[in-house]
Length: 74
Image 1 (cartoon, rainbow, N blue to C red):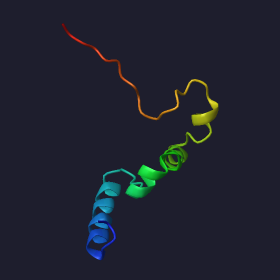
Image 2: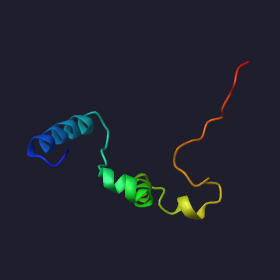
Image 3: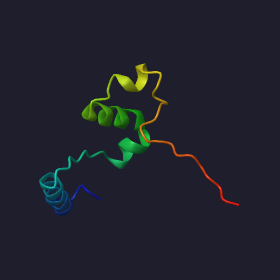
Image 4: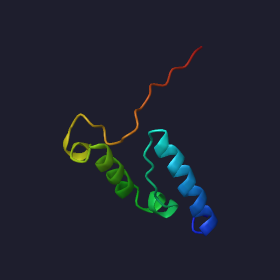
């Protein structure tokens, strides 16, 4: 769990390292992801500057992750 002081300290050190490497960390609780995924996706979209496009742009298929083609080899 991330609620303990020890875990929060590890998270803070990890976040500091990632920021130093040029990354930005967005944290969401398991409950938030599992129970309110739309909110989490909107928060991520807002951060990356896609907020208005996700629902209003017909070119967006309704999800953030690219969907690959399944190729079978026979």
